[in-house]
Image 1 (cartoon, helix red, strand yellow):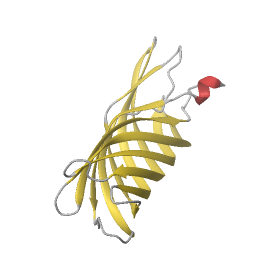
Image 2 (cartoon, helix red, strand yellow):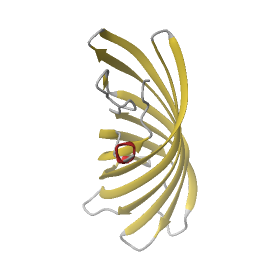
Image 3 (cartoon, rainbow, N blue to C red):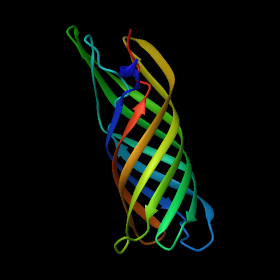
Image 4 (tube, one colour):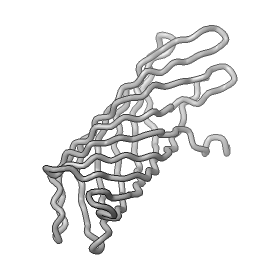
Amino acid sequence: MFEQLKVKVLILLILSLGLASKAYSASDEIYPFVSLGIAKTNYFESTDDYQYHSSWSPILGVGLDHELQLSENWSFESELMLDFSTTSIRRGSSFGTDNTQLKTTGLWIAGKIKRDRLFENISPFVSVELGRVNLDYQFDQEAMNKNITAYKAIAGIEFDLENDMSVSVGVGMSNAEAIREN
């Protein structure tokens, strides 16, 4: 049972470009955003019979963000985001190797606390996300479609750009209900 609760997915790098109408004002606002990212995840649990390897995958997300200024230097952001990605998965065994495309669609809620402009245009942050993810894939000519619950914990830095845009780089980990092949 403990094995089922341990971390199943490690996010090595998340690079997201937030295209949003961010207004750093005293009033809190809700604004839409688009994010582009890249991550390496593995939703499949390796066993004695099968070893799984995934590739880096692009992630496209859209959502709503609400920023609350906690003090002059600290802010809290809450997000609701829908994201989409496709990645290649390779499954190897003593019988050979097969490949598939894994398509994911996730609905996420997130909370991010940020130290605003610790250095000029640079803000460190910590983010926690909880989501429901749909996995669509096919192995051995059998199509599978599963829904799992996952969380992400990410620490990183955000770089403010011109025109109300930012780029964030973060590392972290994610726990997901890993898929076991029977």
